Image (tube, rainbow, N blue to C red):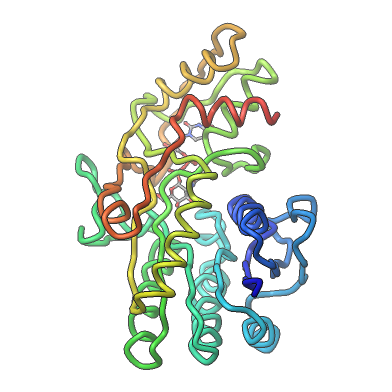
Length: 307
Ligand code: UD2
């Protein structure tokens, strides 16, 4: 029998790659998205788009009743927007997730939801492991951590089976470089393509654990299969376990593009910026058999070729 799967936020950057993968695996895919940051063009042919809001609890319950599992990626994803609209971010990112959890628990189906490396906060100098003390420094990170706590409580009280995935810095095709808060890789590639200088906040020696979106889609599916089989509420990092500084990243993009060196303009550091972000991939490997397979070089090449 064909598996039927709901992807909230499926018109977004990560959700649309996940939808591609599920369809390729022969699943029937229903996408719930209000197109606030997602785009209709991202929805793959073969998926059904329901244009609606994660806060519409009746709609969510109706959709959940009709599927076998849920991937919950809908969120207010821009940290700065969550700071400006604190209550709205909280309603969507935590409240919307609780509504979704409740519907999935009532139907008895597993949920995989997007958590974030943001739950770790500013842990300069050390690798983030799932048992590291979470210390979010933004309302976005605090609400993502809240989702993990709610998943655990919902498992205790209503037997919800779930997996929360703490995404590190995800990059790849379809990440929109135009937003002022777009990911650094999409911006640097757009700069390289347009032959405009990079703006680097601070000295450029801050580092990130960059993971390719295709690997994230695979990790999501592995986590769903595990949540379905073993129940409970688990959380995993989705990361590579290696870090890259921004200056090295800029060099790598120049090398992939093969068109000379992009100029760099240094400006003052961005307020609240984390110096270093590096995840431990061990638990996801041990329990999900998941390992990122796309090297930064190969991922950047795929992204560059998609422009
Ligand atoms: C990532 C996530 C964010 C949240 C956060 C939690 C992305 C796109 N964002 O934010 O959602 O989970 O982690 O910690 O994955 N930079 C420049 N020049 C630019 C753009 C960025 O120097 O044109 C710097 C920026 O100051 C930062 C680094 O590049 O030091 C990465 O920035 P980012 O916006 O790609 O991602 P990050 O880690 O701030």
